[in-house]
Length: 258
Image (cartoon, rainbow, N blue to C red; front, top):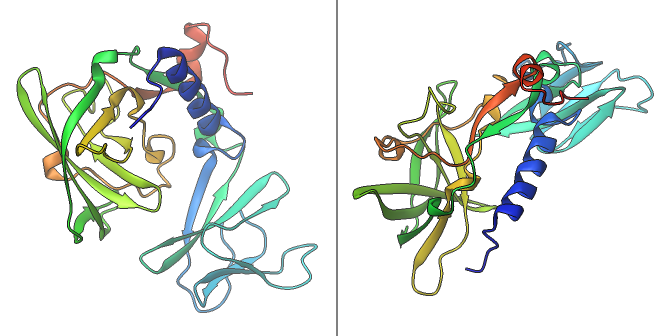
């Protein structure tokens, strides 16, 4: 795998991450996730019109300037005034998400704190690919589901053997992990995207790009928790740490969200 691991490339990644989190309709702007269970359209907080789920799509009626019902497949979105409405699906259940630039979670966010770039945290790992199958996953709201198994990466941290269980989705390999910094120095768990293995079957794990899950920015997300094997006694002092609130940013002379 050929990947730029320079500090300048990491800084560009950091900038893009902060922009995605703090944008008007970015990660921190999620104000509501409304699960749609009623048979008839109903009003939901923060969104115009009335909403229901029908035939695998989110349906909105009574929206001003709409010629008829609005139908949003999972992932589709609609901008109404300053608000962005997005359809979301999990294991067949549908929800309408409301992203609001004035959400307190966004207006109170200045950016993302991270550990300094650490070349030693670009780790080569032995990889054992999964032969199909799935992994049980529990989300922060207690929902149990499964994800496609990706495999296991094995490496050492200061002589301590560590295993990282990976899942696979349309975006490739990834993992959720917690370490000795979680819940104190860093958020209670973090995500890591992983490239495909090299021809010799090894993986490169760049923990400088460990990133905060969406639920670090809004409790309206339903992030997966790390499996038992991905909770380590070793400290990973690399990657993103915590959201930076505006007040802390002012103290550090850091610009807040515009």
